[in-house]
Structures are given as C-alpha cells and as structure tokens.
Image (cartoon, rainbow, N blue to C red; front, side, top):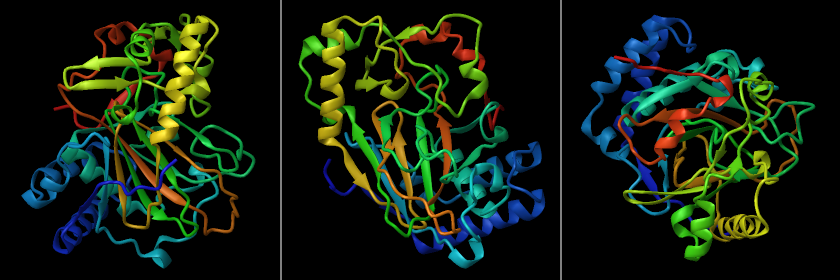
Length: 331
C-alpha cells in the first residue's frame, strides 16, 4: 500500500461559511437531521441555490484515481461532543454536519437511505462499537476492513460514497484503490466479467442476511462501461464455491493488484473523501478503540447519480435480498 496523496479540492472559506450557515438554518427549521419531507425539501432548494464555486469543487470525479478529498469545512471539536459508542447512540450528534453533507451530496446527485440500516437515515455515523471489534462493517476496529465497493450485494448501490471526518486524532487511514490503476491481462478481465460469484449482504443488514426470497444471484466482478473498466467487489462477503480454479486465481490476482495500488487517506476533521463506487474499493486499517469519547468518527452519505450508465443491464433483475433504498429527492 502506498501513502500517495489523493487529489484535493479546496473549498473557499466564504463558501464553507455559507454551507455551514445554510445547514444551521435548515436544522433550526427542521429540528433534527433525521429525514423528513420538510428537511429534504429545504435541502433540495438550498442546494440548488449554492454558488457555482461550490458546484465546481463538487464536479464529477475526473481522474483515474476515482476519488478526491474536499477540504475547507470546519469542525468545532468541543461543540461536537464525545464520539458515540456505536451509531445507535449518536442520535443528532453533529447534526449540522449531517445537513452539510446532505447539501454536498445533493449537489452531486441524489442521496439514498437504506430501510434496513441505521434507522433509515440518509447520513450514517461510522464509529467503533464495543463488542463488534472484529466485524467487517463500520462498527469494527481491531481488524482490517477489507477493501470493497459499498453495498456491493445490491443492484441499487450508490454511485458515489462520501465520508466526512468529524474526529480522527490517531490519523487512522481509510484505504482506497482504483480499478483503473491496476494491471490485469485480458484473460483475467474476461473471466472476472462473467456472472459467477454471488455477493452476500454484509453484517450491517440483518434482515437481508435472513432473506429467503431466492438464491444469491451470481454477478460479474468487472464490467466495461462506455468510459472504462468498473468493478463490484466485496471479498469478505463473496461466495467462491462456484468458481473454477482459474476464476479464483484471477480473483486473487485482482485482490493483489488492488492492494498494490492502494493508497492511505488519513482524513482530518473538516475533510470529505468522495469515492466513485464503480471505480474504487475502500477499506480501513485496524486500530484499537478506546471508547472514551475520543475515537475516530466519520459521517457517511451514499449518492446515486441520475441517468448514470456504468453497470450491467442484468442487475435490474436482481432481488437485492429484499432491501429497498429510499431516494431523498423524488421529484
């Protein structure tokens, strides 16, 4: 894994201040950052009125890295309060930052929420949770979070993933690796483009893991879109039983290549990592959680980009393990 710097986009201080003020007004009117038609309508209206300088910094990912870090937002650490001991304890902690992230996400596309995850909120709190240290989810800490595309089990997964840093005193790294940086031969790409390997829901989706409405659908790991190679990848939840030895070997080579080109992004408070979920796998290095209110705290938003065509048409027939995504803006 390298430590090369991710592409950076810097918000103008005046734009960062305007984003914060806008979020504060929305929060004051709604009373909470939890989704409501009133809050989402105000977010949509306010996002449409943000200046062009903000929109420029939130333009689509434009390098083969498949990601960028947005800098310039301000986090008041004392005002934030202690890092919660699990997402369920977060409530409206850092609520103004939820709304800021919703505004940014709305400029980039359409934020989505999952009915079966974190009470259907559009902004998730990513914090370590006692007793869940070894899980392959955002609640884990003591083990490597395997590089993966977000919600790879589902055909309605996000096109973009946004991770906003509230607190990270130990400079714990988020890992990221882009499929367009790897070196694979055509034979491996051809094998991995076949729909062979099912991807199961991760441990954050209890209902989906108990789904009995049909067998796990086999899906391709790689896919060629109009502008290049894309991927759908989650080795911790991928069933390799049906794969041939050659297919497994190609999958392992892809894993090694992603590890080779992976970079470490050590987010600081006020920074937002934006990842193209069709181009980049992300993970996290292991760390020791203290559970003393000072642990790493990120906020996460998932975004669909309307009319984007980067995935196989066959995904439309998948059952999605019974999970439904709710779009913030349906008009």
